[in-house]
Image 1 (cartoon, rainbow, N blue to C red):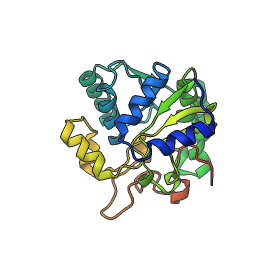
Image 2 (cartoon, rainbow, N blue to C red):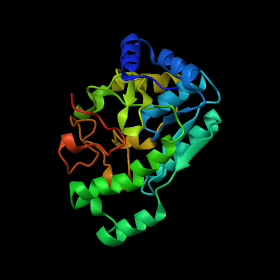
Image 3 (cartoon, rainbow, N blue to C red):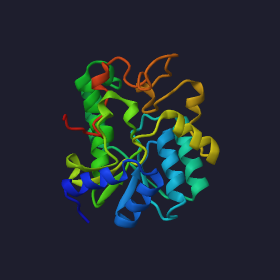
Length: 240
């Protein structure tokens, strides 16, 4: 099923003040089985896994294993898989592409320049994402507007022009960090133990660090770059 941008905008307006469970139920009723949650197993994604499991036990979820994740993230993936009896689809980067990149630019090229960091993200994340989304009519994300200045204009339902005009569903885009963690505690949702060590946003191990008191939630991601640069290319937002 395909939606036009006009249809998606109307639906986004309709669901703007609705609970995320209502958005997810609509999405699953409309697109299942050609819809999947994209999960990096951050707090927001785990909330959505819990919600999806209560709507349709056959929900789909995929993740991108860049080869540079923390062991704590791998441990969490297995916890989620077992708790929710979820068959998690894992996508890896192309081996030859990674080998060539590392040969030409080194293991830690992402520290050398924004262009090199984006190259690494493209090969390890964006290209596998394209494979993961192929064959889908829609995908679900845990994006929140409060996470970053690059995400303030996100709607609950959008047309993803960067990925073949499929539908992109962002059910908790209007939630605060406090709402996310309140849900986790009330519903006994597994989460990454790195959060207890000061991490606020968790990605690849060499590109993620704990944040200091008072720092922005995304300050621990690519901390050597300016805030407007801090996207890996998975979520492309057109300027208004």
